[in-house]
Image 1 (cartoon, rainbow, N blue to C red):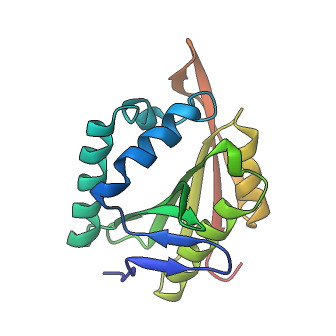
Image 2 (cartoon, helix red, strand yellow; image 1 turned 180 degrees about the horizontal axis):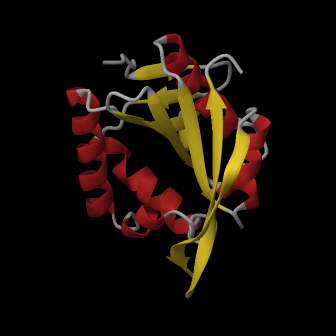
Length: 178
C-alpha cells in the first residue's frame, strides 16, 4: 500500500485533499471550461454544485480508504485552478495519471508540477510504471506527457466515442528511473 499525504506543496502550487466546500468552485471551473474539458467524460456531470459535492465526497472516501485512487484539487494562491489524480492498479505497481486545468491558468506549468509531484511520490515508494492516457487530438494533454518525459507507447485506434465519431487514445508511459 502506498502512502499519499492529504496536502502536497510544490514550489508554486498546492495539491489539496478534496472537501465538500470546494464544490461551488469546482462547478464554476468546469462550467467555464466546457470546451476545454470535452475530452474528459466525467466532467460533464460536474456542472451542478450538488453533483460536485457527491464527486468530492466519493474522491475523499476513496482517498481515506487507501484504495489506490488519490485525487487532488490544484490550488494557486488559494484559487482552485485544476485537478490532478493518480490511480494505482492493485498489485501491479502501475499508475495512471489524470488531470485538467482551468483555461485561465494554462501555460504556467501547474499540471506538469502537480503530476511530477504525484509521480515522484509513486516512484519513491516502489512504483514501476506511470501512464497517461489522452485523446490523440488533445494536443495540450499530450504535451504535458511529453514535457514530463513520458514516451508514446502507441495509439489505441477508435478507442472512445466522442463528438459523434470514434477517436484514438494515445498511451504515454514512464518507467521508474527514466
